[in-house]
Amino acid sequence: MNDPPRAIPLPRNQRPPGAQGSLQQHSPEVARVLTYALLSLTLLGSASVAATGVALKLPALGLVITLVGFFGLLFAIYNGKNSC
Image 1 (tube, rainbow, N blue to C red):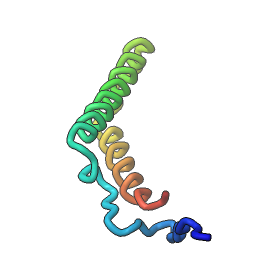
Image 2 (image 1 turned 180 degrees about the vertical axis):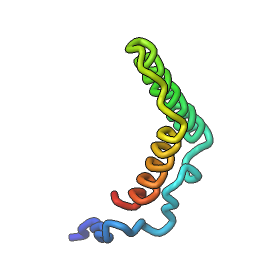
Image 3 (image 1 turned 180 degrees about the horizontal axis):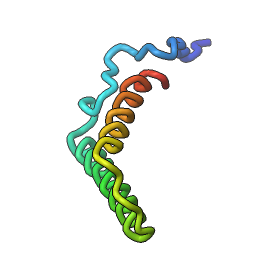
């Protein structure tokens, strides 16, 4: 007789009312854990790349090549941020 209400499908890029899409909607503890988890993953990745470079005795890249790589990655991330 009384069927439960059915969810209304939303378009893929639209959020339900009240959804923020940021860490502000979670508790501060969750935000802190996520922040430190991401920071530790970044540091572990950097340390592993540095250790690999030292173990393989790779030469250091030039300053210009490094800067081009950094700005290239920055540009790629900025342009791909809305692709998902």
